[in-house]
Length: 420
Ligand code: EPZ
Image 1 (cartoon, helix red, strand yellow):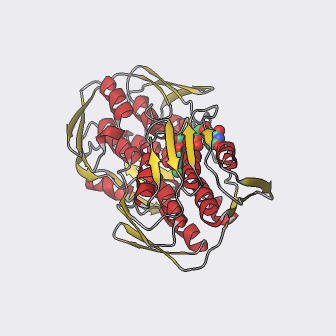
Image 2: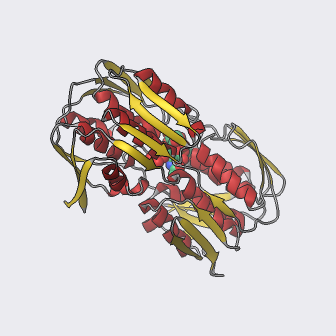
Image 3: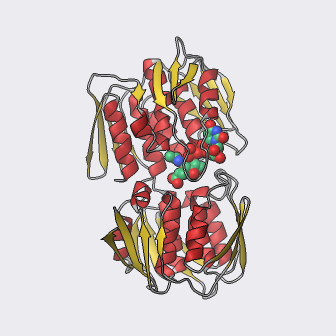
């Protein structure tokens, strides 16, 4: 295993290109199961999670090749309907092969995804949704067994106690596109990654309206054909790099940014004292001399993204004053608090709230990554801490950030890899 060693104190400067969105490429790769024709996915990020999804597709009868950011998916002619525990348990997003398998093969055996450090991660909304479409579900031995004689459209309310569900919306949409008749999904997730999936499905011949709003309408079709699609930029990687510029008092210009996807984050950062200059798909970020504390509550899109919560906490940890972060999506998503406090942060957890008292400086330390976004928050803290930090278990980071340490080095960061 490797760790990232970071020597803090360098203001990051220069240009960086944002990669394609992890949370768009994963369901879009799953959607290639809906056709036997070839698909080309461009602008795909080369990540651990992308590779895991390619392994799952291969196990289901696809041939996949990754060349210079473009993934070619073809059929081998074989079809399996079993997504096994070994692969699904390493990546929750693999559960979104359920919908396409049911739609294409009328049956599926998919391992229940384990929970993870940020929460229990139930799939009740996924199962509720596909049941409405005529699917029989049985859960046995840690697997979901699904079968359907005929899929028929339905009106489905998909909201849960924590609001809408991204992957449940994806799974239901990918089942409904081949169901007979009309499906209306109410309280659908509005995340840009759901919209990107819908755009890919439409290119495959699906009839979808309302994607990106809480009500999605789908008119089932007989079959779907192959398609080519370019993945949207990763709004969470972009947000992480924006905070890297602010926390180091640097001057970074991001390229390949979909600024319309950054509303809630940019709104908050301008409140804090960020100076954001927009120019097409480029974004320049610098900080006013003094940053202000702020209160944040995470919400489904277009609210403040839970996937930016940990990174925001690192910035608030070194912003004088009291900031409060309330996590409304995953109430256990605070594994980074203890590690940041080891670096000298003053953060107190009260249930779904984290109360952050900004300190003058953090001190470099050996810290441990626990999940994808927590690892990003520790790297950000290391960039500004006095002295050296070592972030271990960086395979968490590699799941969702393409060549992140290389991108930071190009911006002037003193960061390198060492064997653990
Ligand atoms: C997606 O996960 C993202 N992952 C997550 O990003 C992101 O944090 C999350 O959406 C919320 O935005 C991918 O897109 C691959 P949810 P997903 O279903 O779809 C509850 C990252 O860091 N819920 O929208 O699995 C759930 O417990 C990852 O890139 C149910 O109660 O999340 C949570 O509290 C982490 N029942 C809330 O809904 C269900 O059946 C939102 O979860 C499903 C979810």
